[in-house]
Length: 116
Image (cartoon, rainbow, N blue to C red; front, top):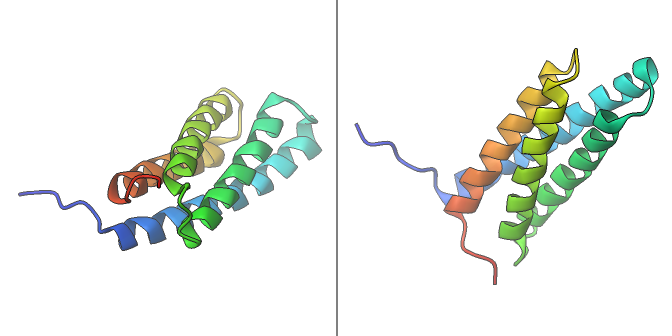
């Protein structure tokens, strides 16, 4: 059976949802990490990743001409954040959120027109 790629509208909506969910999870887990273990590289990376996820969702909502670049950057940062969080105990939810967001960003980029 053939696998159908999602339409641009479906891919965009899924990406926005995944980005916002990842941002919320990363903020919540990052705050817990800081409260229990202090500031460190994973906490800073989680904060940065949450900010980029939020910005990417906004670029997608506004149909920015730069959305494909933001999607690529968000996917790359989420990949890096997932690797860093996988190396730290207790951050499996952050790893999963980052991986979902990165995958969704790649799908949305594949379904969207190129930057203008």
